[in-house]
Amino acid sequence: MKLLLIVLISLSYPSVDNFKLQNGDLIFQESCSGDISNAIKDVTSSTDKYNFTHVGMVYIKENDSIYVIEATQPEVKITPLSKFLYPADEKECYPQSVVGRLKEKYRHCIPQAIKEGMSLIGKKYDYGYNLNNDKYYCSELIYHILLKANNGNPIFHLNKMTFKSKGTKKFLPEWVNYFKELNTPIPEGKPGINPGAMSKADVIDIIHHY
Image (cartoon, rainbow, N blue to C red; front, side, top):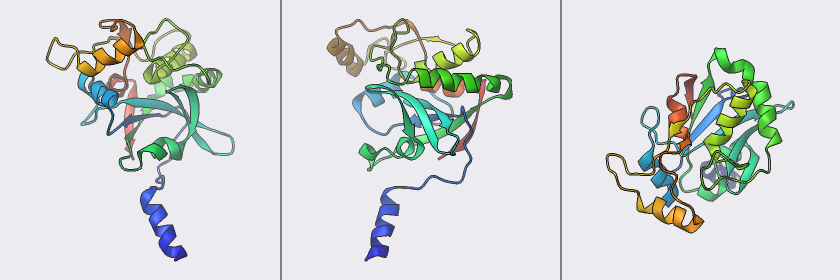
């Protein structure tokens, strides 16, 4: 009976594989459900065949415990790697996770970027995708902490955000409703950055797929 229970648990909660993460690695994720996740996929593009909706930075503690610094609702936090890869609230469909590693030219920024990220723990999530406040969405957090670590010189570059369906001039209904509930205009054309754009940047190498 105990053996059967162990097998059932292992099947429902995948183990982390033997790939060795390093401090500062970026883990991109493509979620498999949700209106806003689908809306993000419809207005962004990513490397390879993916449509990433989230990204976080790896932080390895001195005892070799691995965490991910991430901006997610409702705030910036650090999450144990296993919970990041296999969220408890998505047991039926875990996100696809892909690792990107900064190229050697930028790796000197990682220790300071992690310090910057840790200093922002508890900051509110940026629901409005606004760069000019003290709140952060996932890719904004990564952009910001690497910018600070590189003495104000951007490693990733901002783009003009769009909330219109690919190949059309129409806003997706999901985004219309989303910003209506926030009581704020859709920030079409404003500077921003998304996980998909980060995954395609020439400053990283995609090195692993979970």
